[in-house]
Length: 495
Image 1 (cartoon, rainbow, N blue to C red):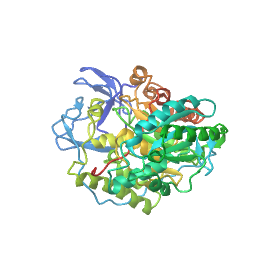
Image 2: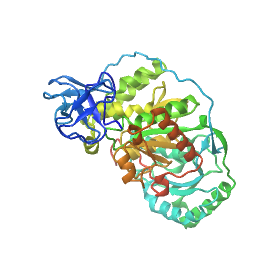
Image 3: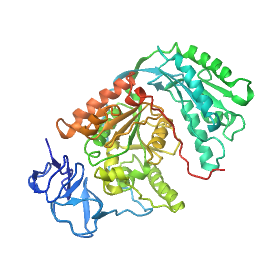
């Protein structure tokens, strides 16, 4: 088993794959020498492979992750006490295309639900979606009674509550309308009841135009102020939807119909070595089969953005990526907040020191293929291949945005563990075996074994097979635990 890994030949630090004690001499994987450890190094943390001078760039993944704030001798811990970010505000970027290509292969098969618009769902669920937070409790009461219909082809009943839909202005109001419309027309929902109050800003009649040519037999509406007994009226509609859904069956579908969201949270020092590269290799495999993947959490691209920019398939996509990055920085600046208030305390405890460190690990999830398109927040995937989506790093907000963009599944890597789920199956992929063992009730797939045995292609193939099993109906831990929620990005004032 490897104990200390040098990720890139140019790196000035290595990552501990287990806790290291002062005085130990450890062979460095990726190099041809032993390193004497001069202070305790926690698992996932960095150790200097050479003397690093004050003001000198610290290299990991082959790129700078910050600079030394003091002299760091060989064998010592490299972390927040002696490192700072090199990042600043908006930049003028230059396009230097690397022209990555993925060889196309025949798509594999899974059994899904083909919808009237040709999209494919991997679940056949009944969703209740409030247009406004005022009717959240009604939606939850309807969910509880409608759970009696679960069985056969009706796989779940879920109310997706939220606090918005009124007292909003400008982009906030527009984003809420788009998000609710996107969720209501998601292919994982075989039936949807959109539940309104009747006096809200983002009412049913306002949201309908955002839904396009939706299937009126699958999406129904109820304005609660217009009926005497809203519960009775809602259950009548639910019964109609259930009768329709009972006839739905899974049929063989190509993996080219899959859209998979890519997200990480509670990362550690192994995330960029195990879980995220495994997801990235998976992304390349799916894209090669004609499918689509979506990378989001824009603030966690800061420091690695030029890698993504230079992988853009053309200059138009490159310019959209530059806008994606700089617009998010401008958003922070408009609020008087620093762009780089990251990593989180949990990230730091796990060994991540700067935002560059986190970003270079985070973007491993994107694989090696070209960036095909860039989507605004509440945008929907229209292009096969790797898509970038504007959304913040917040786990539930970003994962909900992935679902609203069309992802039937979200792959979520974590080194710390998390129980949450978004509206679609949320596959938790651990970066280390410890968290996979301790929180087996949260974790679906252990990528941490990659430091113990096996190869990246083998682990990615294992993940691909697991995703196919989920697409075929296998429940993820968040589904088993009934942890599914929705969160909408709020950027402005509340009336």
